[in-house]
Length: 190
Image 1 (tube, rainbow, N blue to C red):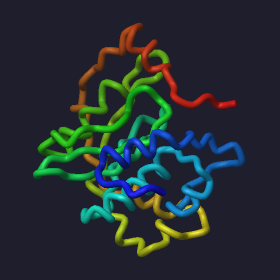
Image 2 (spheres, one colour):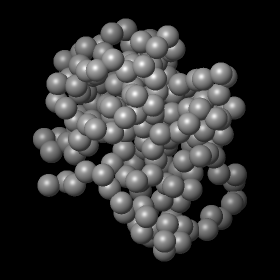
Image 3 (cartoon, rainbow, N blue to C red):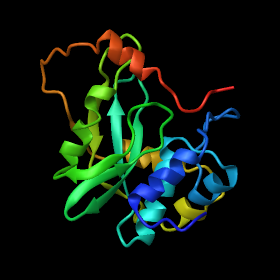
Image 4 (cartoon, helix red, strand yellow):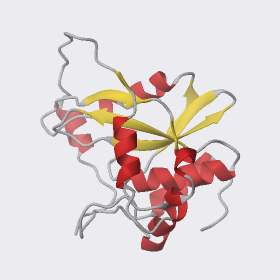
């Protein structure tokens, strides 16, 4: 792996990794296993990014973006610059990507993903976000472990989450052009 000097370098590296379509079943690989496999999905990419962020002197933090049951959650790695939050993201979609460090709070950052998160019929699905989730409590297994990290993804999923949508709010669906843009993918599932 090349020496990555900034969050932007880390994002560029992740963008070059093909997407892990989990052809042989669900995976939650450590950083070492992900790099050996040469593919990553959002959680695996977030771990790689968190490991590199830690090398840059920051805590290895994740943010879980939780959706309604009809959609799939998304996980990003957090970083800070001059007191502002940013995010590194591995995704196969044209959206839900890197966020510049311009957000004063985690809520602001999480909300930046809200309008991009919808089903093919336009239904918006992002419902909550986690507090920053520190990987240091898992020792080094997330870095070098040989087994899938189901217990870490479960702990992240069960960690406290903050609701996004006020009770009683009816949301407008994404429109046709947004839905069309949402179909753009980087890697084909062959």
